[in-house]
Image 1: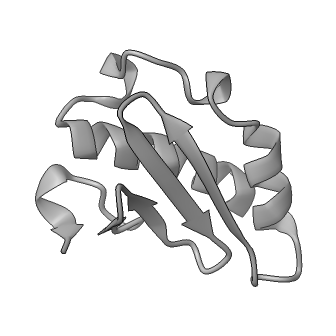
Image 2: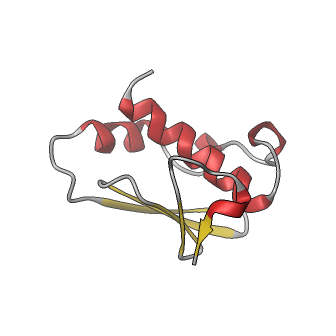
Length: 88
């Protein structure tokens, strides 16, 4: 798995953790709300000065070049996306 794939998977895991469900239990697919290829392309770029914000049902997600994932403004740790690891 590449770093770019990791970021897309981490976004799905972060959303699931935020919702308190397993990733396969999310009621939507990420690719129906954002071009996951765009996330992969940005993550694969040499420039980490980027930020992408998109909507999924009931939430606003922001991902940036340093790997931060924010859901509704809350920072979600990429290394461990269990619900209890939400950072305020």
